[in-house]
Image (cartoon, rainbow, N blue to C red; front, top):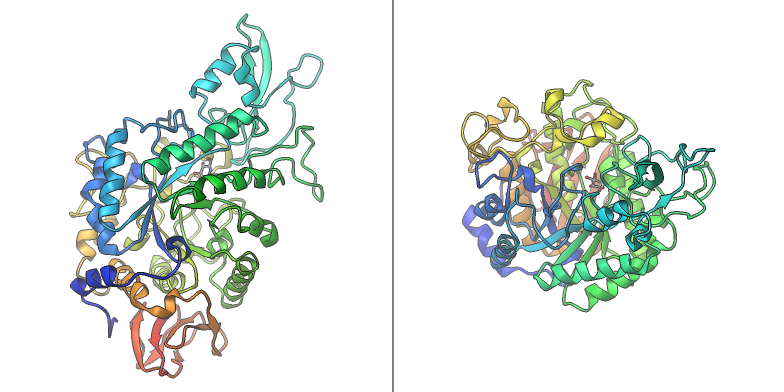
Length: 548
Ligand code: NOJ
């Protein structure tokens, strides 16, 4: 499976010896840590900073360049921490600010950069600003949010009929201090996540200060949540097909990111990475203009079907859009919001979208795993930065069997789909749950079948997903061609994607139903599944050394 692969000890030397040219964020491997589910250090069934610190060696062994930490700030957890009550502290469930600082230094000492998640569209309803705004209709904090009178004679109809990002309504009525019904406030997500008014200078100043707070603590990058939603059309028009959307991608948002870029540019080597869900690639690329964000997540690739033509078109579309603004592409297969790709690729419909709920439809996990292995070699060899969501390196699948009374995701009540299935705590060791994650019952149940998916069970097993990721990331670091900004398509049989990176490296992915011969090569560096008498079987990728 790994004819020329690197032995484990060699990998560490490669990591120290090879450093890519250009800024780190252009071709980094970035690992998303979902802190609730990574590792539990204090035995309460919820992951925490202590757990992350004691498992940092897993990330160093994997060879990742950076960690993106999903929110760890004080929060009532109405949306798993994306409802932030204080951006300058850490939730006690996760630890303390000094533990966070220790983690940042320890990660740096291990050669791993740190990215934190900032959520500018909304705050928690427990944030001091919102509490003041709610307590007194005359409070200046009221202007920091979207309070509006209701429609209708008694003001008891919502100001708009906008549908929220999780589905459901977007306004909640307040009660004035005298007990009478008052204004409504806007929340594009849950009522516990009131939207901020980005037209207000105090909001802008506050977030620039929050960026500085974390940059001053050494963080290397910021992931920007819901980056395209910040501005709303203040005339509150209805959402009408063919007309500008009242709260998606308003032009004013770009000024905010230009200001953020000035802040990040005042520190060395910092990066801003946007969560921008945007079907129109040109609008998407606007966020990546040279004076705006450094990178943005490629959800086009994440949602793409396991289909050679569609995949190739997606790669071309991605590279063209990024080339136009000089930004690096990103390659994302999974995150904490979407069905894990082992499960997606094991279904008949392999696309992902929130609108098309495929929960409970049949899944062939063996096929999904085989494709996920091939997808790993694809996403790790395309030009740009690659994201790895915690657990994908273990080949975890979506847990679709969580009892309804254990579900925590607020999306479930609104859309009938829960994101909890991809947020299940990691299996580290042992034969049964909690698989070394905790000494207590984990906050979400782990499938008993994950006993073969633990870090311990996979370490040293050359056929495991974990060793595939370790080898691929080490080779990626060592291969000059994989640090070049471009790729070149090579001729391939129908259903086969083949491309070169530099003169000496190629990746070939067979998405056709039959085995195909490999193109001319000097040696096979790595394959996602064993070759079939020298041929590349279906749903398999190979990394090749080309004869030069
Ligand atoms: C995107 C985040 O990734 C998701 O988890 C969250 O629910 C929403 N933004 C709201 O913050």
